[in-house]
Length: 209
Image (cartoon, rainbow, N blue to C red; front, side, top):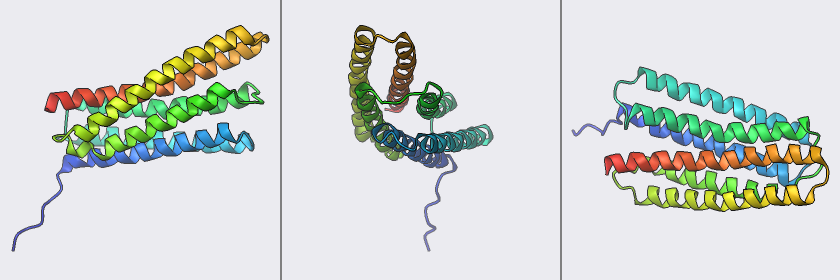
């Protein structure tokens, strides 16, 4: 009788990346809920902090697996970089959420709503990418998402510049300028982290093409 195909030990990294991205999706979804329905803010920020802590645990699990695994599906340095940059997405979103309370934000600016939507799109594209990463020798679907994340980040750059322009040209309260400059920078940082992840994956694909 033919033995069943045994899963390779190194495949666990693909599974752990998918698990990590599921948590990032959760964070992005909760962040969108926060900015689009700016009520019960303290409770929603608490949820964001719990998700961020959960994501940190996933990072530690991946790095522990990396430390104890002799064979990996691709370069250890790339696995480490991917794990850390994915975590930066959630860190940025949690930072913005927390600062809403710290800064005493009462109303969400329209540019922040648009940026949150772009972050959600980029995260969802990354999730598709990681769902397909185990098929790295057939990279078409992966590269489609790399291109899409780059497109979204470029759109985010334009929106970020527009947001800052409006902030400095229209807002008359210098405290509000300081607050929202920081918040926009952190949201743009989340998009940058999404693009960084996609670019690292693109490099991995190129190495194994």
